[in-house]
Amino acid sequence: MKVVMLFLSACVLAFVRSFGAIFSPIADCDETFNYWEPMHFLLFGFGLQTWEYSPVYCLRSFAFLFPYAAVAKIGMVVHPHISPLTDVTGIQSPKIFSFYALRLVQSLMSCFAETYLIEATYDRFGASAAWFLLLFLISSAGLFRSAAEFLPSSFAMICLCVAVSAWMKNKFFVAVFFVALATLLGWVFAAALAVPMAIHMVLQRNGLATFVRNAFTCGFLVLAYMVPIDSFLYGKLAIPPLNHILYNVFPEEGTGSHIFGVENWSFYVINLFLNCNFAAALVIGFPIVVFVAWLASVYDASGVQLWERIIFLSPAYVALAVFLPQPHKEERFLAPCYPLIALVAAVAMSDCLRTLSRPHEKQIVNGRGIIRVLILFSTMVVVVLSCAAGFSRALMQVTSFRAPLSVYQDLSQIELNTVGNLTKQGHEINICVGKEWYRFPSSFFLPDRHFRLRFVRSSFTGLLPKPFAEHVNGTRLIPSGMNPYNREDPRQFFEWQNEGGCHYFVDFDLSHRSESPTYEDIPIPVEGRHVILRKRFLDSDESKPGYRAFALPKSESKLVYGEYRIIRNSALLPPMR
Image (cartoon, rainbow, N blue to C red; front, side):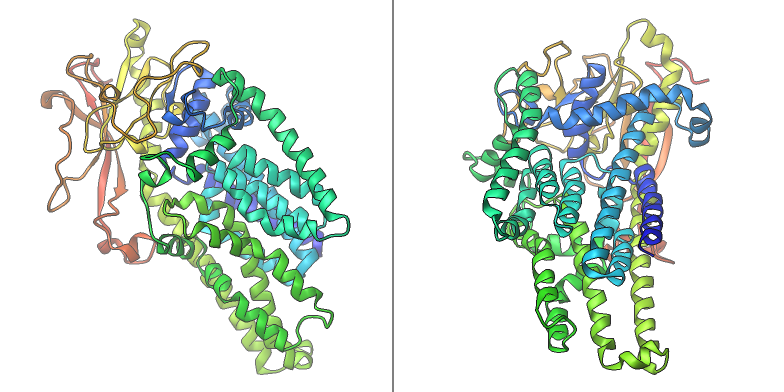
């Protein structure tokens, strides 16, 4: 039974995660500019650099990028040999293929980690909890997207999922190693989720000595991999996790994560309900479930089962206690919590059903009585509502926010192939962006170094990325104008009137708004403008909040869509074929 369940779980999760890898949009510009772009530079010798990668600050780890770069490189090598697959998918560009291959590999890594968590839950809390865990994992819209995101928080989520699973199976060294990976190589603040794990290990017989030895060994192994790579590429001793802590916990005046925006506690609460739906409610109600189950003598008399719930399910609550008060909040920071929330919800649901059925065990076992019918009905309601809410949320993300990926993919594979004669003559093709700079999916969607993203002036007044120095030691060179204060550098903008002009301009058309805000003029002369690509894109600000979160029947009248488009400068480019 267990083997069948795990096989079924792996198959279902693999399908859902693969779908997310291929269709989910990039939701955060941090993913593009802090991870896709530096990795693109390592692979192809050009890309965009943020201030965090300046040798002055050394906040990001190149070592984190290396395993992903290897996957992307393999994708590039494999691409020419699988033409039937590329014909079916329509992905003709080797770079774009490697982009999706990397997302797919990470999503499958998440699938394996989640399956391991299901196995550990089966062993520790029973088959019922394991089945509910599968339900809450596949119905989590947060996991649907986070599993594919190229972010340290997503990497930490996968590692912590393995760590918690190993912890529940009493494989303490494995647990500590994956916590070390999650915190040092991934996201350093994920360590907060491992505090209950550390306490539990220390309280074992000879636990302190064993834990210290394991922690030192694992930490040393991870740092022995990271420090040489980062120090070599930055050109000096560099320990990015330490720098990250110092910047966020002990910021200088005018710096710190809060300068990029602050939110109150409700931001995370709303996002948890949107991305975890029914599971989030069960996490809130779980203490009540445990108390009632204890009163009903559902747990064994020794108290072991009760303490197992308190110990192994506490990381989710520790994480929320740590993250909720932080002023700077990002939806991606919740990623490590998603599997833990699903775990708590699964055990809560299982215990709730056990408590309800306790007084009527004989009737239920014999298949008689209204109680059995009610329990089965309530279970089906939870299953249907959870899946409906999760799939509806994921579908909304895919159908309403994927336009940037689609138009850049079409631009790269269809349109840019028509200007090859210009690039052969050494001309650079300028793809300009203004207010839509943060939706650029990465240079993986540009064919080669002759095609460059350019930032033109817009309503945005903060610091923008700049090109890495295209030099063998480009990562060691200090870029000009970079600062930790989010202050605009005038040199970050492309003065298109004096620098060859914009060959293409990517924009989100907001002309549908009754009171259109004032944005930059299109940096292409009116007589040369030709819209070559357009996709429907949701205008979140103009749409009703309750309807823009989920794909609901008959909701079109409550939603406002604009056009995500690419404008071609016919004056600078050869006639279209």
